[in-house]
Length: 450
Image (cartoon, rainbow, N blue to C red):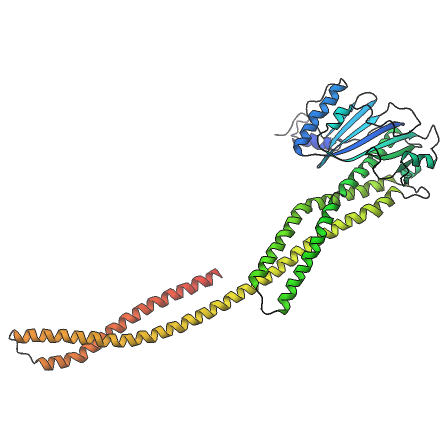
């Protein structure tokens, strides 16, 4: 039933409101500068996702705010100086903590978005953290940017990646590495961006970092499969070469090997197909977010886009190559297996033809023997029949009937022999006709099956 609560009384689709809401379920945040942001991506099962909602309500209670009753795709709550946002995705959930209770200057990572969050609540988040990083946002409209040596000290001396996104309206530094506190780091200077523009830029950076980690999840899978895949490829090539050049082939043994190989390939595809597909999707999102940054180069440093295309893209191409090799190996195994089955079927047909020829020869021998036995049977039956006639003639003669026994007996001999031969031949033709009829039916049935 559709909703009809409109001024025209129209029947509305029951999912209309939720579909409208889907476009607004994850709005960009408005972030002031300076601020400290921490972003966590937590991989979770469906059960852990349910527990995350109950766990989130504990944070509401800690800050004295009424918790929500129902779980949603995106929750955004303002606890005053701390804002928390939780989003649910297909494989993971993200937590974004925005701390505005800070002072400009100093170490931008000494106070973080997690500083106001209870440690006990934080370590009890259900699931496994796959991505975690701090974003230090400074207001360069009021103060000058720090010099590069000092910036490098905030990143523990690691090699920096620099960017001037949004056509130079901001400056971003990062290393795309894990620091001593177990978190990644981004340092952002707001030169002339509004709070909403800064929120959009921060969101893009958080998505780039999260999605690139999720895209790389399939790389260990690809590396694990690759060595065995190379061996399987060579093994299949050896089998194909053996079939092409050897006459003495054990089809049963080769089919068993092909079956084992096909089982391994299907097992790998079952484990890797979803992961590889997810990698392509996440990589596409990363590339799209990089395009939206509209970066300018910082002299002497790789931009975020250059770093990603040099490091992430080859990893994704590796996964893509392994996926294609798996598909190719699966198709080749199927072709070789089909060829083997054809050979086995031809061998069986050849054996069947030899068996039928042998049976036909045996039938001819049996028929000759049957004719021989048939002649002997006619003689035997005739002999005993004439004997019976002789007894009958003796009985009649002894009873006083005047009969010439020798004449009648002599005349009965050819008559009995002819009659017995005729009846025997008739019976033989009758059974032969029955056998031929069954053979014809069997042939028709076999033809219909084909």
